[in-house]
Length: 163
Image (cartoon, rainbow, N blue to C red; front, side, top):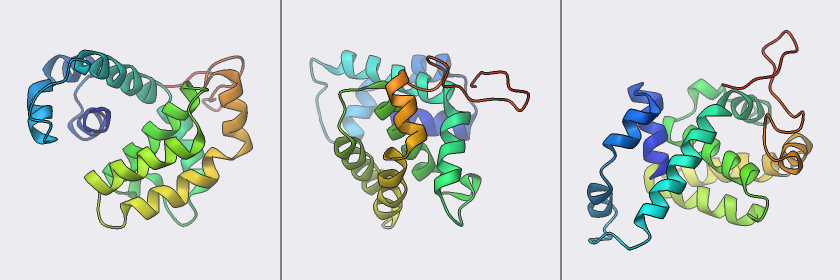
């Protein structure tokens, strides 16, 4: 759900409230072969919205971290789906101190295999594994994410702010 919302946000340019309002949970269920919407779907939808909102708000700093890790890859040249899966995985890892690194990576790889190309799983794994172990992300995670407790992105003049 969250990957589809991020994709729609980035490529369609729609504002998040519009994406959230127009997201068809029943269509999503049909597309993902779950045939019926589970009782926890509202909770899953709320979680997806929270993750998407946080990912978008932290996008500049997340993209900076991805760009520093990705040798020979400019972030804007990465496949759209892969780029958004990376962003989402990084944000989710930073925002949930209980989420083990291996789980964040495995979830991202599965999403990449499902929505990306045949090479997406390896690409996502190759970037995420060292990135989630990096000191900047470890510091951000301890602080509660980007923008928390002094861990901020800068806009070039030293002023914090993401987004």
